[in-house]
Length: 323
Image (cartoon, rainbow, N blue to C red; front, side, top):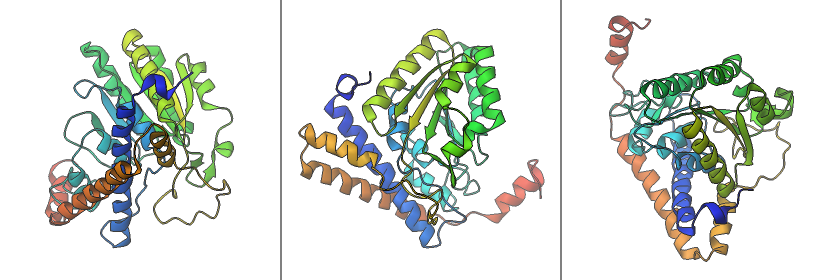
């Protein structure tokens, strides 16, 4: 049904491979910074879902669409065009970042633009996307909202309530469930009583389920669903099955995993590009450039001073927060 040769040119694939490799290199730099003690707390990396994010973002309009993400959203921010150095500075708790270093890795909130922000509450970003979809509908600007979440979050009441409300109100909202098979350490077969795409259809919306490691499949399905949403103003659901490359968080002992050797979607895309005639030298150059850009972003971020404690005091005392 979804054929990469029908939906994308080799140049499209190569450009997206470069973006995916940069996202992966950036995440590796996040991991190194955490290992070096430069990042407070834990970091949740999105290795394995890069092609899903890029395939969906390719269909969006930065001027009128809005996207929300989970605690695993570094790649979403990058795909939306947020400054890599500012993301890195936020993750490391530095000033000159998205929120002065106060949001950290789980709360990336750029000032305006396509990406509204990430959310540390499991499933909390989904109702927020419904608000953005309602705003787009009220303005009549043809915009849509997109909520990225995992199959674990799909079991949250707020997510299912939002799916129902989106149908009732006719909201232009795309639900993107990135199903990596693991809700932290709980396998998907133990957390969901039924497949997720049919569940979405039961709410009354169109739903597709694709191999998230197949860029062409993601691109074609996302293009179809986004087009339908823009045409009829109704919500839709995209489930993308991916392999979680790495642990629930960086450095996790994954002794509970019995799913064997994983196939990296970036390796699959690389093989497709080689088959299409892209030289190994060209791909190696792209990969080296991605690594260099990622290191440069963190080097720039490291020049920023640590967050100013007085900023937190100001928020707590004067801006309605809690002490």
